[in-house]
Image (cartoon, rainbow, N blue to C red; front, top):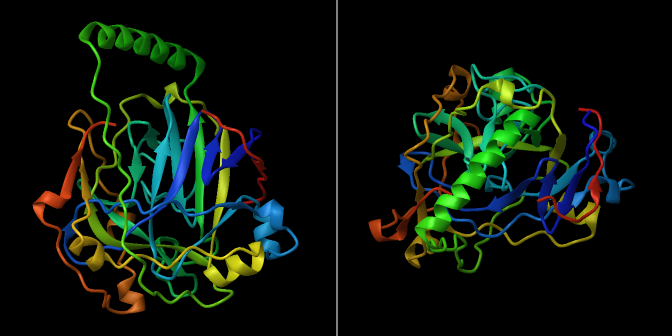
Length: 343
């Protein structure tokens, strides 16, 4: 168990080492074809388990962390925030979303079991192919549809797990010197244009049925999209040997959320056909200076959630080329500390 505190502030998790993580609501992709990156439609709310210890199940109280409300088959992506390099591990039911290997308290390079922030600005799903990921989609445990169930043969953990590793002292000093030189070069070259906003507006939500009350939730694999998971150019020795912080994110159904927190859950997910028909943007991100990781056999073999839950009947309208917006390369904050537990 890590000693440094994870904090939550305005629906952003702040992990030690200057890493922020937001869980973004989005459109669920069809499970056929490969698609542009869907938009962010606002953040999922986060609440500390410790603030509702009298209403959460014993297992959740023991693991600590935070809880997040999600609908059956709702999709999400992770937005990473940070100003200095950090290695972040992302688990789906304690299966690494990058390597498909079992959850570990240490970084590994073969296969790589982490992403590097801020070079990796977001992660929309499990690493599934050369330059593609399969979308994170919420499904109940017990069907075998989760990434955890397909890779390990069991569904024990569910949820999402995060760990952050800062640079070691020597590597951090080298990075600071590189940044000082880069600032001098940018100053000499003149001001740069500010990047455009990524957030998009959305039409009114369409109805969607929540998962049954009491069903524990995990992440399955949905539709494929164009997104690279970048190879770390640094040697593993540049990173701290142990995580600076970690957090367990419990996925709960909207009825559970209302029962535990007393708050209304977010509205149901937006209909993707209405979104596309409204002419709102999708995204394409590419970093020509970075190398993409290849998928491991374990994650390449993960099947989409539709194989368990049935055909996706939501209508699909392909975005026009003008709706796909290209994107270029892309601090610890106040808030209550998140209590860690045994997991």
